[in-house]
Length: 184
Image (cartoon, rainbow, N blue to C red; front, side, top):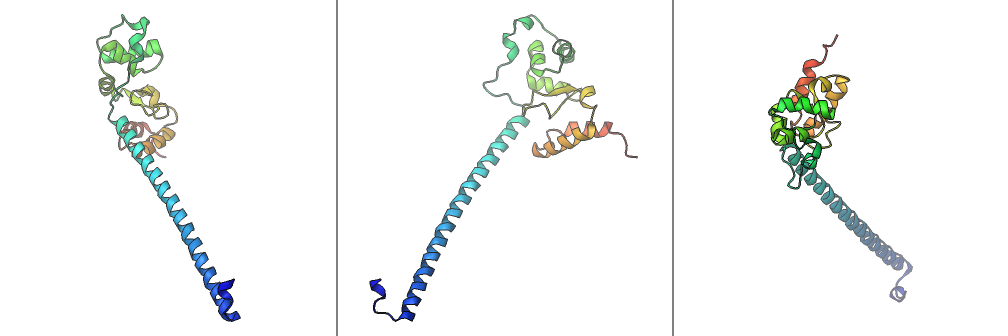
Protein backbone atom coordinates (compact mmCIF):
# COMPACT_ATOMS: atom_id res chain seq x y z
CA UNK A 1 0.00 0.00 0.00
CA UNK A 2 3.00 2.29 0.35
CA UNK A 3 3.00 2.84 -3.38
CA UNK A 4 -0.43 4.49 -3.17
CA UNK A 5 0.26 6.76 -0.15
CA UNK A 6 1.05 9.92 -2.16
CA UNK A 7 -1.82 9.50 -4.61
CA UNK A 8 -5.22 11.09 -4.68
CA UNK A 9 -8.15 8.69 -4.36
CA UNK A 10 -8.87 8.99 -8.11
CA UNK A 11 -5.24 8.29 -9.04
CA UNK A 12 -5.18 5.49 -6.52
CA UNK A 13 -8.29 3.86 -8.07
CA UNK A 14 -6.85 4.38 -11.55
CA UNK A 15 -3.60 2.61 -10.59
CA UNK A 16 -5.53 -0.22 -8.93
CA UNK A 17 -7.65 -0.60 -12.07
CA UNK A 18 -4.48 -0.74 -14.23
CA UNK A 19 -2.92 -3.37 -11.97
CA UNK A 20 -6.13 -5.39 -12.04
CA UNK A 21 -6.28 -5.11 -15.83
CA UNK A 22 -2.61 -6.18 -16.10
CA UNK A 23 -3.29 -9.07 -13.75
CA UNK A 24 -6.28 -10.16 -15.84
CA UNK A 25 -4.19 -9.89 -19.03
CA UNK A 26 -1.54 -12.12 -17.45
CA UNK A 27 -4.15 -14.62 -16.31
CA UNK A 28 -5.73 -14.56 -19.75
CA UNK A 29 -2.31 -15.10 -21.36
CA UNK A 30 -1.62 -17.98 -18.96
CA UNK A 31 -5.01 -19.50 -19.86
CA UNK A 32 -4.28 -19.01 -23.55
CA UNK A 33 -0.87 -20.63 -23.12
CA UNK A 34 -2.54 -23.53 -21.32
CA UNK A 35 -5.14 -23.91 -24.10
CA UNK A 36 -2.44 -23.72 -26.76
CA UNK A 37 -0.44 -26.41 -24.98
CA UNK A 38 -3.51 -28.66 -24.70
CA UNK A 39 -4.34 -28.05 -28.36
CA UNK A 40 -0.78 -28.88 -29.41
CA UNK A 41 -0.86 -32.09 -27.37
CA UNK A 42 -4.24 -33.06 -28.80
CA UNK A 43 -3.06 -32.29 -32.35
CA UNK A 44 0.06 -34.37 -31.84
CA UNK A 45 -2.01 -37.28 -30.48
CA UNK A 46 -4.47 -37.09 -33.39
CA UNK A 47 -1.61 -36.96 -35.90
CA UNK A 48 0.02 -40.00 -34.28
CA UNK A 49 -3.30 -41.88 -34.43
CA UNK A 50 -3.73 -40.97 -38.10
CA UNK A 51 -0.21 -42.16 -38.89
CA UNK A 52 -0.80 -45.38 -36.97
CA UNK A 53 -4.08 -45.97 -38.84
CA UNK A 54 -2.44 -45.17 -42.18
CA UNK A 55 0.33 -47.68 -41.44
CA UNK A 56 -2.21 -50.32 -40.41
CA UNK A 57 -4.25 -49.78 -43.59
CA UNK A 58 -1.09 -50.09 -45.71
CA UNK A 59 -0.12 -53.33 -43.93
CA UNK A 60 -3.57 -54.83 -44.43
CA UNK A 61 -4.09 -53.84 -48.03
CA UNK A 62 -0.59 -54.91 -49.08
CA UNK A 63 -1.46 -58.51 -48.11
CA UNK A 64 1.96 -58.99 -46.57
CA UNK A 65 2.32 -61.33 -43.62
CA UNK A 66 3.96 -59.96 -40.49
CA UNK A 67 7.59 -61.06 -40.12
CA UNK A 68 6.76 -62.99 -36.95
CA UNK A 69 3.76 -64.79 -38.52
CA UNK A 70 3.70 -68.55 -38.25
CA UNK A 71 1.03 -70.71 -39.79
CA UNK A 72 -0.86 -72.30 -36.88
CA UNK A 73 -1.13 -75.52 -38.88
CA UNK A 74 2.65 -75.97 -39.09
CA UNK A 75 2.59 -77.86 -35.81
CA UNK A 76 -0.78 -79.59 -36.34
CA UNK A 77 -0.13 -83.35 -36.34
CA UNK A 78 -3.57 -84.12 -37.82
CA UNK A 79 -2.80 -82.45 -41.13
CA UNK A 80 0.94 -82.99 -41.48
CA UNK A 81 0.38 -85.80 -44.03
CA UNK A 82 -2.36 -84.02 -45.97
CA UNK A 83 -1.40 -82.52 -49.30
CA UNK A 84 -3.77 -81.16 -51.91
CA UNK A 85 -2.52 -80.26 -55.38
CA UNK A 86 -4.89 -77.41 -56.22
CA UNK A 87 -6.08 -74.47 -54.25
CA UNK A 88 -9.70 -75.01 -55.32
CA UNK A 89 -9.58 -78.61 -54.05
CA UNK A 90 -8.06 -77.35 -50.81
CA UNK A 91 -10.98 -74.93 -50.47
CA UNK A 92 -13.38 -77.87 -50.60
CA UNK A 93 -11.23 -79.73 -48.06
CA UNK A 94 -11.21 -76.67 -45.79
CA UNK A 95 -14.98 -76.34 -45.88
CA UNK A 96 -15.42 -80.08 -45.32
CA UNK A 97 -12.90 -80.47 -42.47
CA UNK A 98 -12.92 -77.01 -40.87
CA UNK A 99 -16.46 -75.92 -41.68
CA UNK A 100 -15.23 -72.62 -43.13
CA UNK A 101 -12.89 -70.98 -45.61
CA UNK A 102 -9.59 -71.17 -43.76
CA UNK A 103 -6.83 -69.48 -45.76
CA UNK A 104 -4.09 -70.65 -43.40
CA UNK A 105 -5.26 -74.27 -43.70
CA UNK A 106 -5.43 -74.03 -47.50
CA UNK A 107 -1.96 -72.50 -47.54
CA UNK A 108 -0.56 -75.32 -45.41
CA UNK A 109 -2.06 -78.23 -47.38
CA UNK A 110 -1.17 -76.79 -50.81
CA UNK A 111 2.20 -75.23 -50.02
CA UNK A 112 1.08 -71.92 -51.55
CA UNK A 113 1.37 -68.70 -49.57
CA UNK A 114 -1.72 -67.03 -48.10
CA UNK A 115 -1.51 -64.19 -50.61
CA UNK A 116 -1.49 -66.61 -53.57
CA UNK A 117 -4.42 -68.56 -52.10
CA UNK A 118 -6.48 -65.38 -51.79
CA UNK A 119 -5.57 -64.22 -55.30
CA UNK A 120 -6.51 -67.54 -56.90
CA UNK A 121 -9.82 -67.80 -55.04
CA UNK A 122 -10.96 -64.17 -55.62
CA UNK A 123 -14.57 -64.22 -56.82
CA UNK A 124 -15.15 -67.67 -55.36
CA UNK A 125 -14.58 -66.35 -51.85
CA UNK A 126 -15.18 -62.92 -50.33
CA UNK A 127 -13.78 -61.36 -47.21
CA UNK A 128 -16.58 -60.43 -44.84
CA UNK A 129 -15.59 -57.20 -43.06
CA UNK A 130 -17.65 -58.23 -40.05
CA UNK A 131 -15.30 -61.13 -39.35
CA UNK A 132 -11.97 -60.13 -40.86
CA UNK A 133 -10.39 -58.64 -37.74
CA UNK A 134 -8.29 -56.30 -39.95
CA UNK A 135 -6.30 -59.24 -41.25
CA UNK A 136 -6.12 -60.10 -44.95
CA UNK A 137 -6.23 -63.86 -44.44
CA UNK A 138 -9.19 -63.97 -42.02
CA UNK A 139 -12.94 -63.62 -42.39
CA UNK A 140 -13.29 -65.27 -45.79
CA UNK A 141 -16.58 -66.85 -46.87
CA UNK A 142 -17.75 -68.66 -49.98
CA UNK A 143 -19.56 -66.46 -52.48
CA UNK A 144 -22.81 -68.34 -51.74
CA UNK A 145 -22.52 -67.49 -48.07
CA UNK A 146 -21.37 -63.90 -48.50
CA UNK A 147 -23.81 -62.98 -51.26
CA UNK A 148 -26.88 -64.03 -49.25
CA UNK A 149 -28.67 -62.68 -46.22
CA UNK A 150 -29.06 -58.95 -45.56
CA UNK A 151 -27.32 -57.65 -48.67
CA UNK A 152 -28.04 -53.97 -48.02
CA UNK A 153 -26.48 -54.13 -44.57
CA UNK A 154 -23.42 -55.85 -46.05
CA UNK A 155 -23.23 -53.33 -48.89
CA UNK A 156 -23.44 -50.36 -46.50
CA UNK A 157 -20.74 -51.81 -44.24
CA UNK A 158 -18.37 -52.72 -47.05
CA UNK A 159 -18.88 -49.37 -48.81
CA UNK A 160 -17.94 -47.52 -45.63
CA UNK A 161 -14.83 -49.65 -45.12
CA UNK A 162 -13.88 -49.52 -48.79
CA UNK A 163 -13.45 -45.77 -48.53
CA UNK A 164 -11.27 -46.14 -45.45
CA UNK A 165 -9.20 -48.95 -46.96
CA UNK A 166 -8.83 -47.25 -50.34
CA UNK A 167 -10.56 -49.74 -52.63
CA UNK A 168 -9.67 -52.95 -50.80
CA UNK A 169 -13.31 -54.12 -50.94
CA UNK A 170 -14.10 -53.07 -54.54
CA UNK A 171 -14.83 -56.66 -55.62
CA UNK A 172 -17.22 -57.10 -52.69
CA UNK A 173 -19.18 -54.02 -53.70
CA UNK A 174 -19.40 -55.11 -57.34
CA UNK A 175 -20.57 -58.60 -56.38
CA UNK A 176 -23.15 -57.33 -53.88
CA UNK A 177 -24.56 -54.81 -56.37
CA UNK A 178 -24.80 -57.55 -59.00
CA UNK A 179 -27.01 -59.76 -56.81
CA UNK A 180 -29.19 -57.03 -55.31
CA UNK A 181 -32.79 -57.28 -56.50
CA UNK A 182 -33.95 -54.36 -58.64
CA UNK A 183 -35.89 -51.52 -57.02
CA UNK A 184 -39.62 -51.69 -57.62
